[in-house]
Length: 199
Image (tube, rainbow, N blue to C red; front, side, top):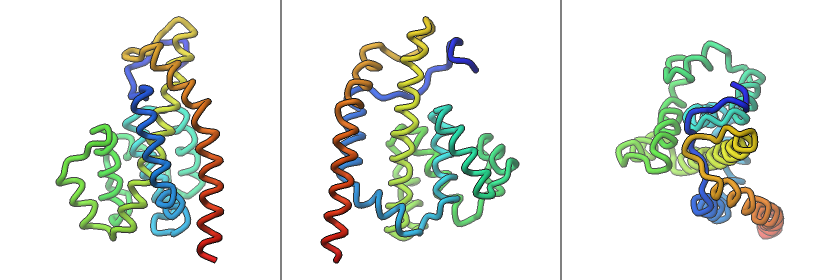
């Protein structure tokens, strides 16, 4: 699908929801770093989680990147096609609960059913469940920012994305330019301080 064509409505940020997502990320920087470092969720597993979320949110940039990364990690095309179709037969059994939860979490826009939440927490250790949530939040932010960027590009080409408003598109763009550089610097400094504290 080209950028010049109207696309179905996709989930995007509003300025308010973007600020909330940034606040969550800043409050959970240690969890995010630990999720990458600990190895409880390996890269292939994390990539499956991210593809499940991306498949719901429809970010073409994240889909392109994580599909190519999945193939590099040895996830075959048959499994990828099954995931896109909502089938999980070829996914390692110990990962299926997380993949299904990630898809559900995205479909419910971050408000999962208590039963699904309980199943995730009872199936995995508390640390692994926290890692899974961190990966879900990270890819959700990437998905929605990608969709916001597409919405603005489509508007500039005269084909606004259904359901998206110019004020939201410009607001999120402005906040991104203001907040993310500072957040990244803060995250780097915070990581160094934590490493110094650990000795």
